[in-house]
Image 1: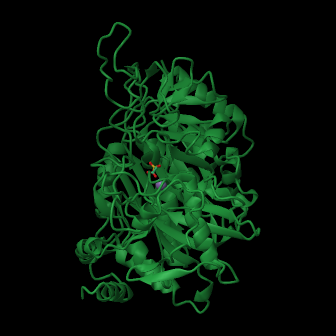
Image 2: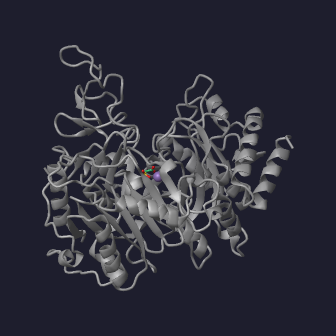
Image 3: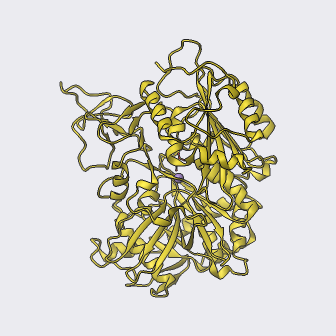
Length: 627
Ligand code: SAT
Ligand code: MN
């Protein structure tokens, strides 16, 4: 059973944790904690200071509660299985509650703020009974930033506190910056599973009713009912994308769903590249890629989110607001992503919905070529490769993956062996190129460069991808996912495109990064991938950098600039030239099928789609001879 802390719902009595010399002095914060404590009625209030001792106590508590299993094979690391109903982001339960509906736009769920607050206030009433309310001060991005991006998450989930500590900068330093007058985002979270006196807890408390709500004008987040990932670690998608995209619009910068990597050429030129892909399309793998072409080196700065602001030189500088990796586990292995594997080996990680080995390690599909002979699957059931138990009886888990397809490792980014030393540079790193990518079996070539900024914005705005297990719902359905931000735009999609397009009107627009569209996932007629991906994607990055340096030729096609024959380095690549050609091909029939989908998409978004993008679409149609 879970040990209970003192049953005194009095924040002032529990504010100063003995380990922490820092006490909150910000009146708004103290008032908010008092208000939420009165509403949610926790047994105790704990202020999180970010110390190792605190983490130890927290993870011990999670082990005792049966939520965590301490791994024998990895230092300071834990296996965790969620409730089977709570395994991914819930996009249909995610709301942008702007004051006016039009500001949420066609792509977001909306409800009037007062209506949503009434519903959720009722849900929060008493929702933390029997639990501890944690106050988690945090900072997205470096503490030393000119304007540190602060937040406070209130949560009743120890899993969330432990994960936030890995994923973001939490504790005293953030609290000090708040005490000093820093602006901060309110982020309220409850799993929505109050305990009656004496009631035993379950390992993964959650509620069938879920709401993930952003109030953009108030820079406020309310989340209820889920303990999982992007639903509950509110510094991640809710703050760093949905709320931050609104702040970025207001202040003239970009908050994007992008990895950040550093490429060093054999000539030792350094280029920083950001790349937007939908969830579970290989961002973590690309961010940590091991180039297969000689002389090239990749270093990592971020694998999921980039905040980009303009420097005085007119260039865009990117910062990774996060401090950890929340990577999709399946498919991550020593051949596909050795750097992620090394980061994980170093320990200090939480693994959610993976499989557990008999000797106290984790496993998932794709980690090793052959699975271990015996596992506990993510649902806690016995699992064997054959689907049979020792007596030859069929297991309930037979025929199912041992790890959930959206299972995750949560690991400090500082453990990444190829982390760029400048990963926490407060002003960020200057970006040379932006890649947009999706997961498409057809139509989209391996790589195409945009002719200019506006064309690149069009590529991003019409980006499409097959859905993945990162969100609940059907997998493998093609949908538009603009800039890979469909579930994360905090305001109207057309206004978001306009914000991007307007950057092209800056007087120093020639300093903007060059834009490319990539697709690692195109298939041959027989269903096989045309391009091997992973480390071989370095060949595409090389062409990108060679384009920036004026060293590589492109050929103009109706959809953009693709590598001229012989310009993509396929030296030593184990792929036929015909497959490479097919990966790069522009098939007019496929584009004929694509264009109505883009028409539909712009119609769906409505009047706010900027004229410049309609003009791009008209240009594309006429170049394809389809106008
Ligand atoms: O669930 S998360 O949003 O944290 C991960 C993802 O979907 O990219
Ligand atoms: Mn993501």
